[in-house]
Image 1 (cartoon, rainbow, N blue to C red):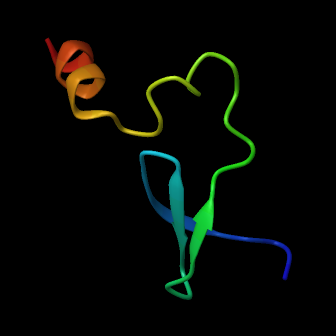
Image 2 (image 1 turned 90 degrees about the horizontal axis):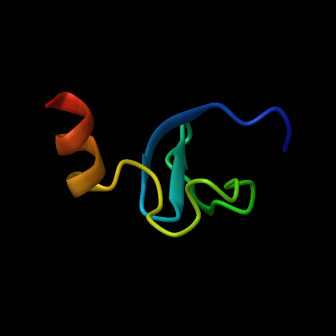
Image 3 (image 1 turned 120 degrees about the horizontal axis):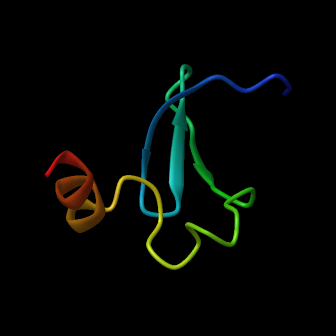
Length: 47
């Protein structure tokens, strides 16, 4: 099972190289309220 290689993340879901969807239980306190790659956060960072 380990190691896990993540290819994509969105909200609270991670996807690995084998196509598995995993719940992100490792999200830190700084991102847990918005999830991974939240569109509104990504847009602000790009600005």
